[in-house]
Amino acid sequence: MPALRRLVAVPALLAGLTACGAGNLAAEDVATKAEDALEEQVGVRPEISCPEDLTPDVGASIRCTFTAGDDPTEHGVQVTVTSVDDDAVRFDVEVEDSPES
Image 1 (cartoon, helix red, strand yellow):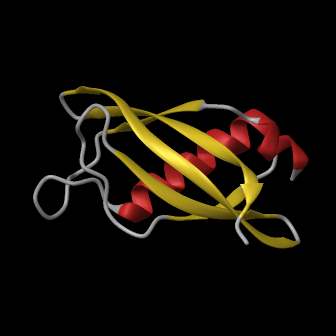
Image 2 (cartoon, helix red, strand yellow):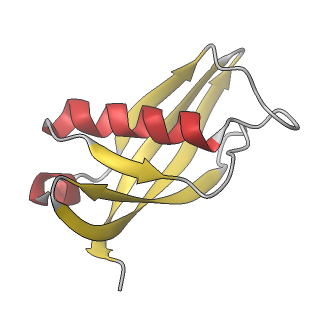
């Protein structure tokens, strides 16, 4: 878990996703790709939950929460869209320094 907290921003890619609703990216897909990106960086797969879908617009962001391993402490993670190219959406995943209280 400490390795996850040391991360500043991890880039991730959502490619070939079908948008739901009004062209948004499904919260479940965003969470899964964020989990993939963090696991690749630190070797521990967190469990991420996002409360809503993400608009595929540069600068759009959503605050999700995660837990990792046997530690039930929830931490915040910010997912921010950095680029959109046809059906490929790139975003940064930034882990917050302090756990939620």
